[in-house]
Length: 67
Image 1 (tube, rainbow, N blue to C red):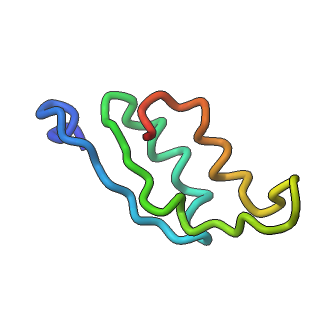
Image 2 (image 1 turned 60 degrees about the horizontal axis):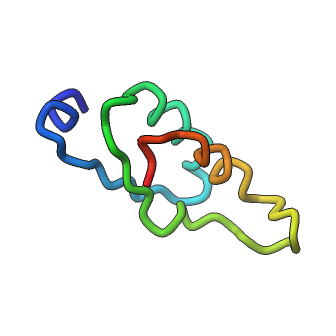
């Protein structure tokens, strides 16, 4: 990850829903790396306006290095 940061190369994350709980700690461990979250982590955006199963996705909203 350090090499990606040094070279300015973004890292594309392809994570499935069950892996999403690990993503916030990963992106916060490498604040100089820009991460691109592919397909929004394939989270379940159902469940009405509360999006019950998308909390790990929404947790990334405050991380400036996730696009």
